Length: 374
Image (tube, rainbow, N blue to C red):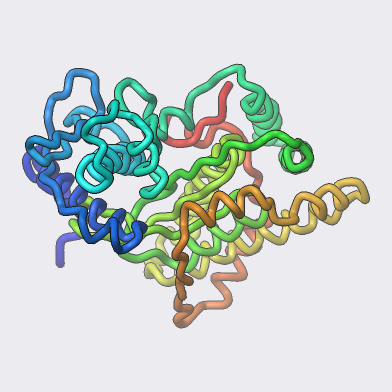
């Protein structure tokens, strides 16, 4: 049997070698957002992992080197590493192409470089990495909606199925009304983008179905972006969701919840059957379809709720503007269907109609998943 690279455990030396290769690959990907005159004059730098004494990364013009903190890259998700890498690339672009040698480190030409690369000008020093900012708890107004949603999702874990369904429906109604109020506010909104799930060379049909579910019901936009896959040593794709912080947080939580639900139910369903990976896709697609049908039914229930959903489902023009800036060259990803087993898909759909999003699926799991604030 051939080794499965996704299950390999690498030595520290091999892991660092792959990370350095990933940084170089991400650098090559990132420069293609630049206009040709800028891209032509930006040469690949050296990359290194160092002990940087509290800094996440550093650009050295003398060495022509982008250094990242070894502790940082080994302890934070790849999305946070990409954010910091772009910041250092902006320093390189500002110095080597825009001529910022006589400016302060974060002066006007550096800010221009950040704009050109879609880099975060704050992502350095002691600035919280992307995933830490997503997971932090605060008393900010946008986090209050998360606290209320979490309380409702705690009720959605009730053993009484009707009580659980009612709590989940109430949570979704609250999310919809929050977004309607947000659309009607005059003040500017802050949007962010976050990688969710794992980067892979290949994604299955259920991954795309789940991405569309998040777009249709959780007020985020999903884009499949190029992303380095360290365990494979190559560029693959990952799902990146964009929206306001509460919407990204909730959508990420739902994404993890549904995937774990599918995994648990498939283990039960496939016990002693030995069905192959393609049948798992049929089953998972059925679960997503079943849950989608329930969400659509909840939208239609109640005249007031239906009006709220109809209003809030209209495209957010500010999010559209943010996405047009962040992704100026979007392409369509085609997915194959292959041969399906309608019986297994029907069974999945039946189970999906009983899926209730509740609080706590990630607690105690030991990873950096999406726990809504307590």
